[in-house]
Length: 476
Image (cartoon, rainbow, N blue to C red; front, side, top):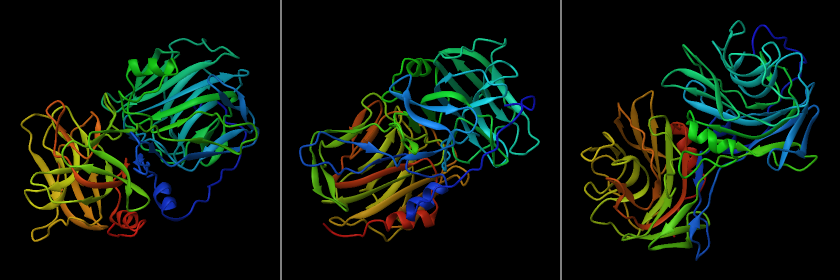
């Protein structure tokens, strides 16, 4: 939205009350990106993935259960209705995309915001209809200050906005080319350079904008099938969304997807990250005693789980991330034993594992995605050895700002190393094995694995400690 448009209709905002560990993590913007609890019963052929819900409460004249582009949609009156979450979804200073189906009931006399992720003063992005320009727009503001101005990606000419018709909008920021792009009904209609993006980390809002804490620019119409991605989507991926297909396997799936399929009278709308299931192969036995509920046992010779049968990356391994898992070795193997890894074409983007060469737990990334690359390890110190037959909680943290890989064992920092040039391991994710040189499977894990989690942030030492304490250690 620009300074040439009137911001009208102030409404107060609220913060939802959540408790415990989940409160600390989520309010810091760090819910799990994906979790495979491995709680499936004996005989299961795959482990379902999940994420915590991202709930957006309804305010004013906001109505669920109306006819949507797919299923039902959220309808807003354009005066007071909107939905607001307490959680940001994407880092707006890095590559991201937002997709939504929208339908205007009428053309308003001011801006009408469909989706936004606000900052303290101005939004990190807005996907909206501009009355001043009479066209769809995707923008970022120059800074998170009250005096900042918008940078708009939009069509060159006014028009092309039809009241009462469903329209597919995709706005993306390409952090490499520093460009905003807007697609309308699968067509690139405008792009513009962004000299310096910034990170807005207030909660996601549907149907209104928020400026200096005040709600304005309400959307008169319906919103459906909102998805947010932590990457700039390709033209092919945008075409899939325009055809109401899901991006996942192949591709890195949505960080959050809001289907807007709630029944009439709902108090809010819920979104979840899209998570690809982990399919079992070979000697995997689900339904075994775990650290909490069931776990999956891997035979150490051919048993593994693959997440994404084409590609199924859930993390950008060039950015901040955290991986955690509970593991118990049945025996110490004579070679490496991988607990969880996200692979590249030739080398892993990360591995959390047991190293037989050093007899320790380790967390690594390779020096490059090449066949001759070498591992860069954070591992337990000299004089420390891994134990078989005992549950252990392992956490690997990649911190881009600090240029470090850090390993935590049972909530305590165990090792750290420098990683100056991380690469993107954009292939499948594996549990219980590693993949190298175009898909060669090696380093099978002989033991039991439980509760694998991925985060798109570098958890702090205190957060890791509390994560480890969620489930009591035991020797099952």
